Image (cartoon, rainbow, N blue to C red; front, side, top):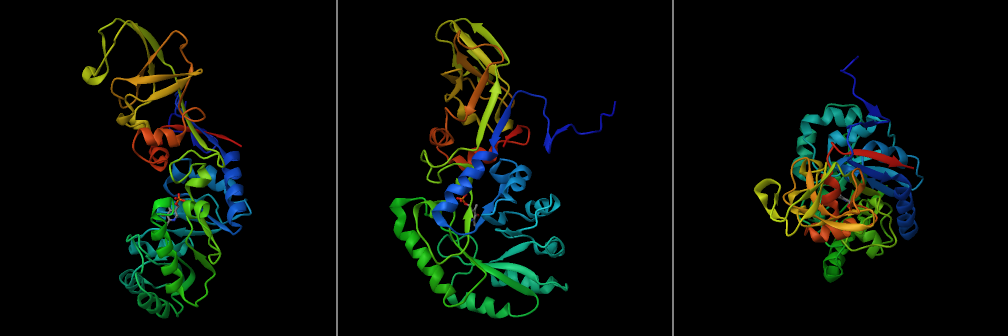
Length: 370
Ligand SMILES: *Cc1c(COP(=O)(O)O)cnc(C)c1O
C-alpha cells in the first residue's frame, strides 16, 4: 500500500469525516446572471481567499466559461499564480500590494498589478529588467484610505510616468467604503464624483468601481466593468436576508454520539453548561479548527426539522448540542444553509457573512453540485 499518495475526490482532498460544505455551483451561475442583468456590463469575478472559502479551483473552472466574466480579481500573487496553474487564461488583477521582489513571477505568469502609489512605482522601475511591460490597473483612493492615489495631480503624474514600454495601463479603479449602507449615501456619492473627477477625459480599456453593494444598490453608467464578490456567492453585502440571490455554501455535519445526562451534570471545557433536567446531548465532529468559532456557544443548529442549542464551549474539533428524542445517531446537522442563513448567523455573531465563509477551514471537505 502506498501511503504517500494524497487521496482526492476530483480536485478535492478527502478528509474521511462527516463534516462538509456543500457548494452549489448552479446557484453561483444563477447569481452571476442576476447581477449581470442588473448592470449589463462585463464582470470581474472576485475569487480571493480561496473564492471566499468556496474553493478557487472549482469556482474558477466554472466561471472561466461564463460569457459575463471577463477577468478575475484576487488579493495575493499566490492566488493569481494558482489560477494560472489551473489554466485560467483571462486577465487576473491582484487587488492588493504584492512584494516587488516577485516581479519576475508577475511577468512570467502574466499577472496584472494594482499600481497604487508613486513609491510602489519607483520600486518597480528599480527592479524592472524585462522585455514585456508590466500590466497595471491604477488604483485611486477616493475615501476608503486603504491604498491608492489621492489626487488628480498624483494620478496625472503616474499616468505620465507610465508612457513608456515598462508599463501597460489596462485600467483604472477605486473601491467604495459605504456602498452597502443607505444611511451613508453621501459618502458613496462623494467617492464616485471624486473618481470621475480624477480620471477626467482620459479613457481606459477598463474603468471599474462597483463592488457587489454598488451593483445592487446604485446605478453607474460610466464604468465598463464591475467587480462581483459576495453577491456571486449568494449573500447580500448589507448583511440582510436577500430573496434575489441564492446562498451558494451550506455547512453540515452528522451526529457522532448521543447520550443522556442527569440533571446537574456539566458539559465541555470549563464545565460552563449544567443540565437543567435529565437531557439528551449530541456530540458533533466540528469545532473552531473548522472555522466554527467559540462565539457560537449558545447559538442553534438545525436537525431534522428542529433547532437545538450549542451547549458548553465549542472545542477545537467537536461540540455538543442539547437535543431530544427526535434526534438520532448519524442524523445530518445543518450549521448554516437553507434553515439558518449566513445573514442570520452573522447577526447572531455580530459579524458579517464574509467572515464566516472565509473561516471555513481547509479541513472541511467541499462537495460540489452543478
Ligand atoms: C474584495 C473586494 C471586492 C469584492 O467586494 P464584495 O463586497 O465582495 O463585492 C471588490 N473590490 C475590491 C478592491 C476588493 O478588495
